[in-house]
Amino acid sequence: MKRTNIYLAEGQAAALDRAAQAAGVSRAELIRELIDRAIGGHPGADLAADLAAIDGSFGILAGEDAFTRGRDERMDYLDRLAGA
Image (cartoon, rainbow, N blue to C red; front, top):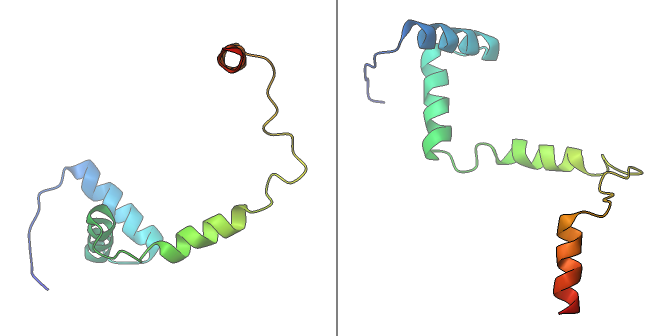
């Protein structure tokens, strides 16, 4: 591991400390995790969380008419295209 120093605004440092405390990790560990996420240091690091979120979303709209749509300009336009 290589040591480095960075300058943070007071608000950034405070927010970082709050986030680290909430996550139960050190400030340094949180910075490393955030850098990895930002630059893709661990390509599969969030894969499990992403897959869990996708899996959890299946069926969430079952029985809902979430995608009903009335007549609008887009539908009129598409009808004109289809008739052309």
